[in-house]
Structure formats: C-alpha cells, structure tokens
Length: 280
Ligand code: NAP
Image 1 (cartoon, rainbow, N blue to C red):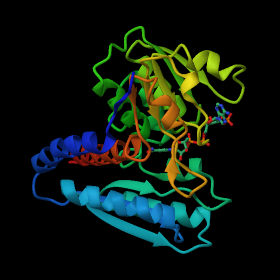
Image 2: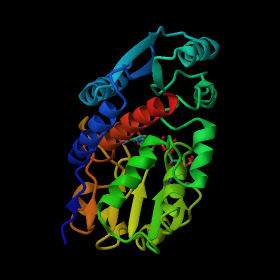
Image 3: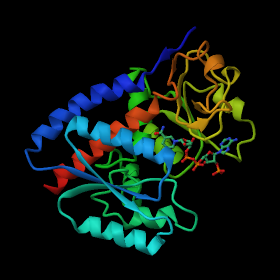
Image 4: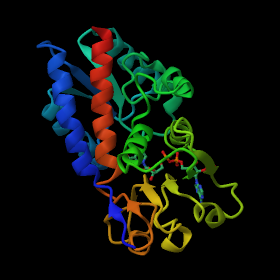
C-alpha cells in the first residue's frame, strides 16, 4: 500500500475559497487581525509572513505589533488589553515561543475570549467539551478537518493521539471523541507506545520529536496525521512521523511541511471571520 497524501496546501486553498465568500458576506468594513510578537524570531517571522499572505488572500487586514525584547509579562498583558478595547480589532494572536519568564497561560487568558482566534483562552478551550465552539483551537480543528476530509468512518474507529499538550494533543483528543471514535491518548507515561499506535485506525502525532513514529509502528491503511514540526539534521523541516517508512504502510498521511500547518492557518482565518461576525 502507498498512502494517499493529505495535501494540506490544497485543502487550505479550498478552505480559503469558502472563507473569501464568508468575508464578503460580512460587508465592506475592515476585518482586522492583530498579531503580537516580542523581539525578532526568524522562525516566527516566516510564520507571520505566511499568516499575513493568507489573511490578505481572504480579505483580512493583519496588523503586526512588535514589542521590544525585554518586554515583561505585565507590559505584554497591557498591550493585549489595549487591543481588546479596540473595536476594529476582531482577533488577537500572540506569536510563540514567548521569552522565558512569561507564562503563556497568563497571556492567553488576557485576550478577550471573543477575540481569541487561536482558541486557546480557557473559556474557548473549555467549551470544546460541549462540542464545536465558535472559536476552537486552530491546530486541533485542522487535524480534525484533515481526518474528516478522508471520508473515513470515524464512529468506532480506534484513534490514538500521541502527545497530551494543552494546546494540541488534549483538544484533538476531545474533538475526535465527539465523532464517537474510541480515543487513546499516549504521553511520556505510556509504557509501550507502539502497542497503542499499531492498533490505531487514526493516528495523530503531536510531540515535537523528529521520527518518533516509524512505519513499523503503524497499522496498514491507517490515517496518520503528523502535527510535529522539527528541524532535521540537515536543517530541513520534518515531522514526528518518519515519512519514508510510513508512506508505504499508511492509508493516508500528512506531509511535513504542507500538511497540518497550512490548514491551521486557514482555521485561524476562519476563527477571525467567526469572531468578526459575532462581534457585529
Ligand atoms: P509540547 O507542548 O512540547 O507537547 C508535547 C507533548 O508530547 C507533551 O504532551 C509531552 O508529554 C509529549 N511527549 C514527549 N515525549 C513523548 C514521547 N516520547 N512519547 C509520547 N509523548 C511524548 O508541544 P506542542 O505544542 O503540543 O506541539 C507538538 C508538536 O507540534 C511540536 O513539534 C510543534 O512544533 C508542533 N505544532 C505544529 C502546529 C502546526 O500548525 N502544524 C501547531 C502547533 C504545534 P509531557 O508533557 O508529559 O512531557
């Protein structure tokens, strides 16, 4: 078997077409997304550039607020509160990683939940327990969208999520549970990882360790979604799933780059339009 590639770029392009129509339906007034960044981070800069390009493509104005290195948590929270008060700002995102000493939870909680387009405010995170919230966490929503796009029957499917972070692993597990798949979450305490991954019809890996999952850990025909983003030894970006050994085994596989990433950006724009619509 050779896996069908879940082409995130193509799927994101389809989504952006729908989003352009949703943007038009909001009328002529500007939809603004504010991105807050501390200092200069080349990796984040690339990400912001991609976000800005994708936002412009659907008619969302992106405003980048660069705060100087040395900005304290209190100063960052003050800057976020100022954005919360501006009516023309529909959505706010804070670029990560944040400098050491700044607690991402405090920062995320400072964003008005109605403008929290990354879906990471505790109110939005919590509301995913009640099925699809207005602003779901973007990466989890992207993974869900990619899996649903395969057309496979999720009801009763054995689903294994590797990684239990608050912003990725846990929300993915909850969203897939809503489809009545049988979800197992693996983490550092899991005794025998491959015992779990080998029985997964749907395998989502979100750890941040290059090549953690190899083809011999994958059930033939499984849908494998690789969320990880790592720098390989040659400097290239690679996922958590070893692509060459997994592609001959899996039924569907997301590439890295070009899989979950572009769909995550599309979900961010979808959330921004939803936030703008709700604020109107
Ligand atoms: P994170 O906060 O570091 O969480 C990693 C998770 O993996 C933790 O739950 C950790 O458990 C678990 N883990 C560590 N080693 C493990 C092992 N050997 N076996 C099983 N689980 C293990 O990272 P994250 O924010 O969730 O991100 C995960 C990856 O996704 C990163 O590569 C990140 O860059 C990428 N990412 C991609 C997108 C995208 O749009 N494509 C978006 C967000 C993140 P403990 O906490 O118990 O150590």
